[in-house]
Image (cartoon, rainbow, N blue to C red; front, side, top):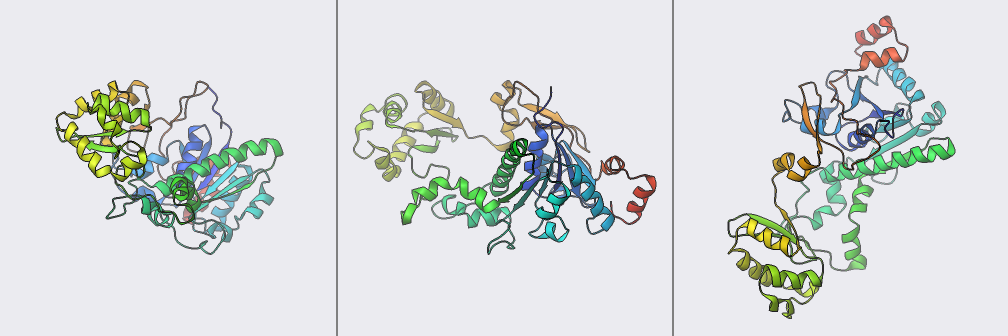
Length: 393
């Protein structure tokens, strides 16, 4: 079946996570993604670790279904190859160091003159202007600048997210912005420029705590795995030492929880706990009551009571449990993709579509498609040999 982005060509000057995550999702929808890498070593994320059959876990995650073209962009002939590609491409995504693309003659105005229909998406830490424009930006640094660390962790110590949340946020907004730009191009016939900032992307995700602390109000406290402002909503240990995650959202659920789960219906009217704000203020006292009740049960018995009462709950799974999660298995959400080191399991992208299947092609080796792309651009054997001799590819 035809995919939404079949026929769309994306060229990406990318490394690490933010831009590769954006372009992999474009590839999932059928786009041809040509990943430009350094000759020899390629994207530095290839060397982060060797955890996935000898390949880097980050790289495997965000680079399937792409073609790898190696170019030394300091070489004028290699740079001309890139310009030839961009002259016929639909999208350029880049997360080079601030100003690097402009210094190579790849600023938007020159790209627009080369290809008026090109959509150019820049991803950076802080955006293409402003006093922080040239400041180095890594995921943890953006988590800090965006205030994320101030609401994550325990009362005694802030914690970073266990995943690259600032990179992911930027990649998601780059992805949706490119899709929006493609829709806009259908109306205007012209390309456009997208400037994505990691700070602004994660800042958007910080909307709730920003408004909670509006105009100098007390910010939400760091509360570990528990919800900062709703209680009981978080992890509770059962009698077998295992942890159950549960969440109450309203007063109706609170009454049912007291009656059907704790078997203490009178607790619902206790003046310490008869509203969320009071439960939140007295969470330590309520926690002791819940733990005393759960301590007489194992985790599965707790979950059975919660299920019967229709109170939201979850197992506290380890990372590896997700590969065998019964819900993902039942819905057929796991596939296999090729790689330089053999077949690998992969989660299908979120969203089950009736009209098309996601593209789930192999993770490329460094420069695997270089020669084929060069021939497509009209380079003959002699031209390719010259590029190789100059270490330009």
